[in-house]
Length: 270
Ligand SMILES: Nc1ncnc2c1ncn2[C@@H]1O[C@H](COP(=O)(O)OP(=O)(O)OP(=O)(O)O)[C@@H](O)[C@H]1O
Image 1 (cartoon, rainbow, N blue to C red):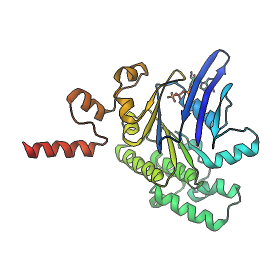
Image 2: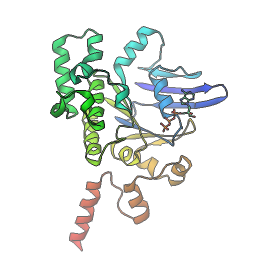
Image 3: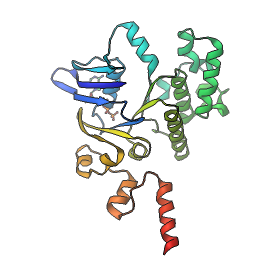
């Protein structure tokens, strides 16, 4: 279980970046964290990872307050792994296999286990087609997949994804949705911070809305995205499928496919 309790954090005195946040990331399989630029999403991730320490309140890991000694943090970061928005920030080798295996080799994991996990992770992100290309020759989207594979080999309980679809073309975005769904289907928790509201609506089963470091709303995707005035206060808008429901009276569905199936069905019955 990963949670925060009345967490407050300031980068500078008297300017709180996070205020009184009580969040539970085990509520949903895929949890969304949304809010306007500067609302505190990245700062929260840093607090969850123990890279920053709250001035008051706490991070709870497996039901206990997070401990900040080196050993505890090392153990935490094997179970709570972050994938940054910019893959270049976490890819260091030119060779994909070496890059993905880096953390496992550091931990002294058996080479046969590393190979098996590498194969699995690359298959899950659809990376086998470019596995033998040098990393510097990969596209942004391909690098994102390698960065996710590097996190997956850790077989962590939680994966924190910062803007997983940023910079991806429509096909790459669809592929990323599939990747996240496959990760969640493996029984892991995924936490996504993103401005891609349609992605959050499509893929998350629990959502926290933040504004200026505070929690503004929480709930299932339907509970959250039907609150138009709250979304406006947070500087956000509704996903297009929710707009189609609230403004055009279409049924509230989770995916485009469901909406088109509904519209075809209604045409047939006319
Ligand atoms: N290293 C830092 N030093 C000082 N202030 C910081 C630092 N990082 C972030 N902040 C401030 O903390 C607040 C929250 O920023 P943060 O980056 O967490 O927001 P965010 O929700 O991730 O934004 P975005 O959507 O733009 O990525 C902002 O006011 C920002 O200026």
